[in-house]
Length: 146
Picture 1 (cartoon, rainbow, N blue to C red):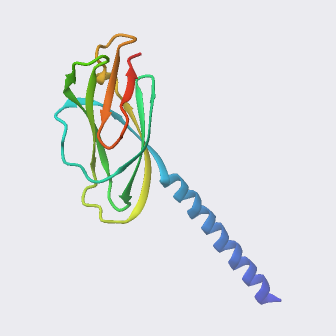
Picture 2 (cartoon, rainbow, N blue to C red; picture 1 turned 90 degrees about the vertical axis):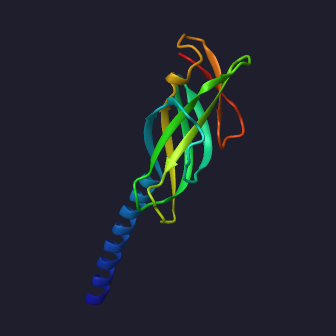
Picture 3 (cartoon, one colour; picture 1 turned 180 degrees about the vertical axis):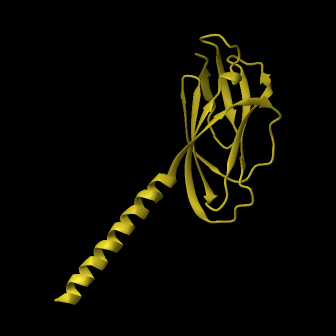
């Protein structure tokens, strides 16, 4: 009888620990990083990542990405070309630069980047439209300055 009670207590302890680890890993999977877009030279070297989805909401761009790592701090930059294609509406090439800081770990990280893209507007006037051509994303991203 005593061994059954000890076994039940051990099982409850392990179960609680497993639940805490599960909750922690859920939080790690979808973190949010906030950035501000900058105008500069694109085609900078970048560590690998995959763009999973893109959404514009007002003057914010939300990019869901996936990359491997987990042992070092990863950083990101969002750069817009200073050159704008003369089309209607105009088009600006943009690049997301990922710096993994030599992280060789293999954990799959999913992260959502929230980027203030107001500096990438064609004109800083309400209703000004421009397309953003993001490297690694097949479709142009329509952006209307608000």
